[in-house]
Image 1 (tube, one colour):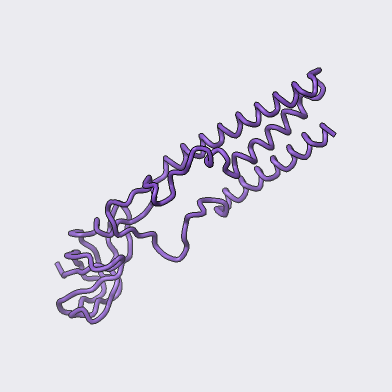
Image 2 (spheres, rainbow, N blue to C red):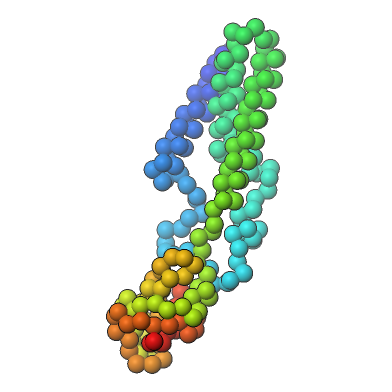
Length: 193
């Protein structure tokens, strides 16, 4: 019975671990907070990846009980139990050592995941940082605020495409412009240079 518990725990834990790694390599098992509906844009310059209101700083207890940490516990618990079966330990000693090894693995994985999370940035674009920057018209901007066009502009070290309006004459594709005002979550008011 004890052998079966260790065997199945190791099998399930290691199988799930392999599946997680494969999904991660294929880009399918990453951050579940990512949104594919459009660009990740924050309009408030004070928003921060570490702001608890955004759910990125979790309780340490729940960090330890993440799915990856539980899978690590199961795999190491089972493998340790199996490896100690023929080592001359009593059932209680094997169980205690296996639990300690599993808990250690769980804590190490939780710590590593937290460190990896802290290394990353939110990747959110703060549109207000575009104010005063120069860009190029990508899609013609109708004049006198009668419609929107698009501009490509470098903000926060990356080139982004945002909606743009102008109070002046229409601005053709390819023309250089300067951002003079932020008028919406993803909309800039521009003027020709």
